[in-house]
Amino acid sequence: MALSISVLLALVMLCSSPAYSLDCDLRPSHGNPETFTLLSQMERVSILSCLKDRTDFNFPQILVAGNQLEKTQVTAVVHEMLQQIFNLFSKSDSFVAWDETLLDRFLVGLYQQLDDLETCLREEMNVEQLPLGNENSRLAVKRYFQGISLYLKEKEYSHCAWEVVRVEIRRCLLVVNKLTGTFRK
Image 1 (tube, rainbow, N blue to C red):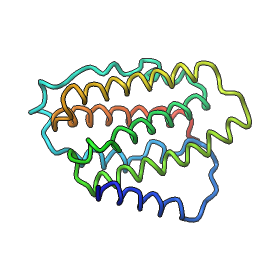
Image 2: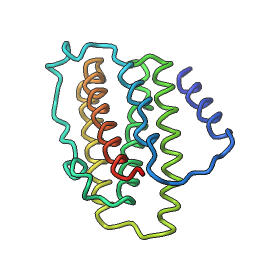
Image 3: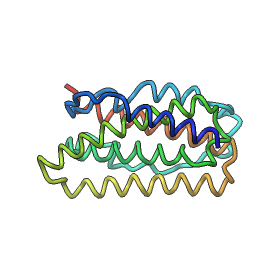
């Protein structure tokens, strides 16, 4: 319970900070290296001891070929991926698996990136209509994360299951970095 209160306090502090101008280019913060580093530091169990729990989560292939996506699609997909990661690590079942301080910082970093991307999405939607392929990409991301959630439930949220998921989410963040890198100036 203390963790959820500290996350809420951090989010309130973030929301009350002065707003700054956002140029809606997919900036490096949308593939935030600090978020990746925090996730790496969250390791509690060696992945080597969890090899029997590994699984193929069937990462959406449409995202691997990210160079075929338009900027608006990439923004929407990156937002969906970060939202799903935030939701996954915000579950009460995740609080027992991770160091509280690292988890708080990880979630605050994700929240800030989501907030930036929501502003960009609103601006982009005012300028252009979202392409049809956008919805297919977002649905693929949602199905992917449903599979991860189901895996955790089937493994009863064990430490090894969370470690396997942590490693998979690191892969997601690398894809986010690759996708956003395509549109950086």
